[in-house]
Length: 317
Image (tube, rainbow, N blue to C red; front, side, top):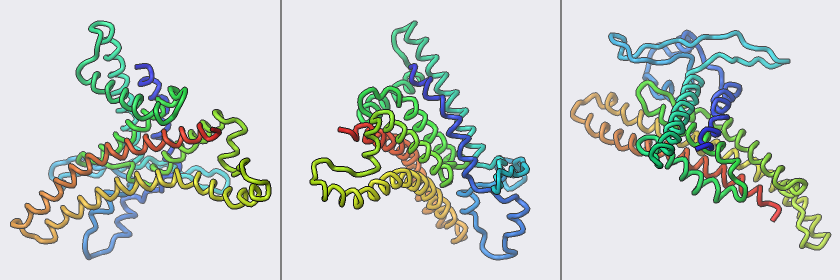
């Protein structure tokens, strides 16, 4: 279970890095000033966007109370102004990192103790070990290639961190940090850096062939022509991979919440208890689908990261 412990090394980094890219949230007063005086109420956008407050259950306050988050003075770096004030998504990312670290460390310690005393793991520790071993043996090692053990901690961190962020959006008063494109973009950029560094370490100077197309099997004139034609295509391919990771995770996690909230909104649109059962049944079905999608998208992100690492490590063959 050593790789389970090593996988925690970048969990907090994954949680903190998106702060630099996350858009600055408006204060509650600014939202109030910007809101129209009358008209339909938009209750979907506040649930899928970032904010400067948290919601907690509270009696006699429409079942929820807003807790404002601290607002810090912006930091000026050159001509840039960066706001490091915590937002709702930042808080839930930190909670996800702490929860992942706590659960995996506890499961690893319990698994080690059970192996020493009983020779096998059982219960929750056994379930976590089975999930980690499945990802290691069926996802990471077959796709990353030879000597792929070094990438197991990174892949496990990606999976459990993204999964926890996805599931936080399923609980009442929660928020889906992976429904923020700044968060998914940061995860994709970190993955892209790992991919490129893995390619440089595995191929040495041969890494340049993943950027500049130079087919030695072609005649020299055709080789030069293909160099200018295909090299831009290679660069577009490098850019499209993190872009695809960003949009896939962001769109899937955002779309599920929009559909769910829209179905619930039908109850208030019809203003009829007789028709309330249909939206409730449809919303329940969407919730079950969204629960499946939370696991699926964490798995797909991890799988594609491993595939990209394996492709660039084997580029010289």
